[in-house]
Image 1 (tube, rainbow, N blue to C red):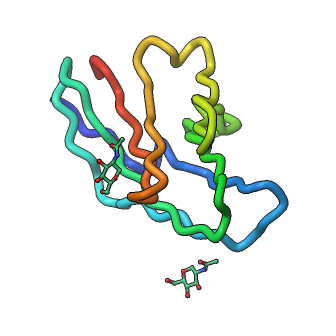
Image 2 (image 1 turned 180 degrees about the vertical axis):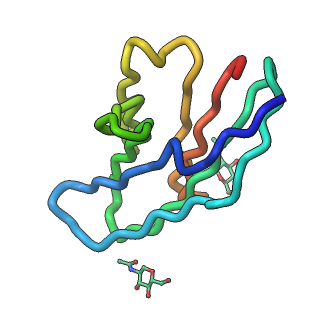
Length: 104
Ligand SMILES: *[C@@H]1O[C@H](CO)[C@@H](O)[C@H](O)[C@H]1NC(C)=O
Ligand SMILES: *[C@@H]1O[C@H](CO)[C@@H](O)[C@H](O)[C@H]1NC(C)=O
């Protein structure tokens, strides 16, 4: 068992050229059980009818790495090196795009 600091992975919201949208993510540490799937939550608040959401992996002294993109009307894309273990489903009704990590 180990602790994954939620700040290591954060979500960046992008919606065309709109600015000032809100994304909230719990900032507490997320307890992760090794070998078990885990989910990091993310809520968004937008006036856009077709938001695109991006999950980035952030590490100290390394540029944020794009893991995946989820769009309202298409499946989006997942970076090859994250395909096996990372997935996210955008729920427009719930305004959430939780990130699921397999086999931490
Ligand atoms: C962002 O959240 C703040 C605080 O809840 C709110 O006052 C503001 O209107 C929100 N902005 C947008 C664009 O939703
Ligand atoms: C999206 O969220 C709504 C409201 O929480 C829920 O009723 C619905 O089942 C969710 N849809 C999917 C595909 O998970």
